[in-house]
Length: 224
Length: 241
Image (cartoon, rainbow over all chains, first blue to last red; front, side):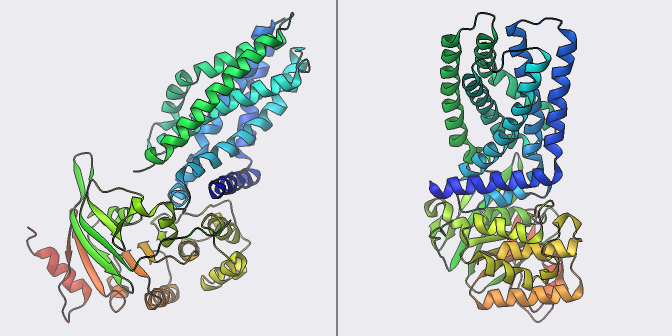
């Protein structure tokens, strides 16, 4: 188990190092997320808490989809995915490594997007910062857990860029609903923290289910 | 990372191995036994099943029928650590373009739990004659340099079974000569080398067990005084039942 976790961290650190050099995903996801937020900022004159929560999650999920598409594409270019699968560690470690790398990237994106949304929409992002962070973290984890699995599965499919969102969005609807509802409860004029906590608990449950299922199936789906 | 207790083996057996992709048979009832110290050469036209056979030996692809035994045991029984005894150099070289030569070796060395990593990486770079380029990104390397680094990566963890797909592609004469010497050293150390190649000239005097594949079927080339190319052509000209 320790070996698998260390291998996962090695893979995540390698992904982050590669990203630090190319800055490909950082720039594209950030640009995409900012563009989403700006479009909505111009469209809504005085949005409600519900709408602001929706804007935040749309920006995170769409940017996340862009990042997911590239996560295994890089491994496909020189068939390095095969080299990872040939390592003497549990196959789940490869999945976990890719997931950790993606989570760090999307976490960084959220750190930029949340203050921008706070400024552009005068949203109360500092009202319950830990609760909001918990919702974003757990929601992103649920989305990325499913997305990483399907990104790996589709890495050898020619129309993977089209198929990934088609498969991903319906499966992650529960995560999106929980994330938006929980965030809206914080941003509402009359905030309901108990409701936000309930949605956070729901997200943690989804995360446990999705990550467990993905770890369980990854080894099997990666066998050619 | 602690080096996993890798199971060792001194022979690999393929027993009636068939691999289907949909309705197509990439490999059909292939049987082969390799012992420690063997250099097995896989020859055959494009699409004959050489790469499929290497993928099955690497445990990346499961046979549709038949079985592969490592030291008499099936791969699932040996666990994940079995892969620590296998080194693969594919047609794609399994290297990260955005990392330097040294970083690539360090990454894969850590992943394989290689002990004394710094010394092993330095030795690998020296054997690949890349010490001076160790800090350069692999994306800037020529095919030949990447091929040499790919081989260093495949051998870094001291595998028992070495699988090479077209290892001489892109190498200059001197590098071919060095690679042939490296393979002989592996042979002397008791490794099992299985390589797919179209380079008959280099294979002569290096490969001691030439095997021919055609449309997924396998046949050992008959021993004889002729060169491998002639024996191969003769085998292809015969009727395969």
